Length: 203
Image (cartoon, rainbow, N blue to C red):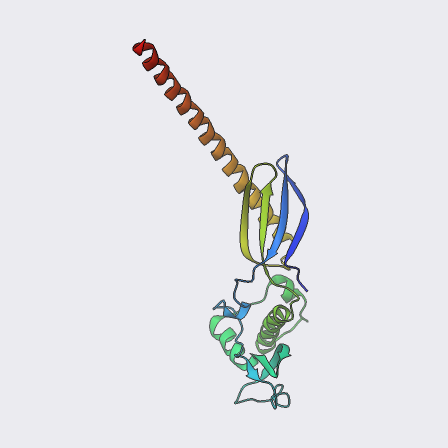
């Protein structure tokens, strides 16, 4: 289960200590709704009577249960349609996933592995093993923060990379605010000088 909010260790970056936390991004669509490069999932269907055919044939397609049944309904990952989509779009595997495969895999076996990997990805989201989150970085005592949303919670070291990029953004924003404050102070000084001159002329 992914928590709605998770506080991460402080980030010490460029000699500055930042606070970092994540929040669940419930506004993000399901992974299969992202378009290209994503598997095909059915709408919620009545699950009664489908259990016997889910691993075989349903209207010419092989379906696999995705996540959990809810109130007699379930979503299914369409293995057949996803396989066709993967072939049409030229899907591939990451180097990490490819290294896990035995030597001598045929193109057909590789395509099956790609579809299986996508099923596992969507299954993980449906079972709440990972979710989309936002990474929020703040600089204590300044009220300045930066965030990036729509990140997969199991992204590992990428979360730290994002936190550093957001810290860079905060540093840049802080310098911009300092320049603006300096400019405002200068304007106030000029304004006061003008008022002092006018008061002296009126005497």
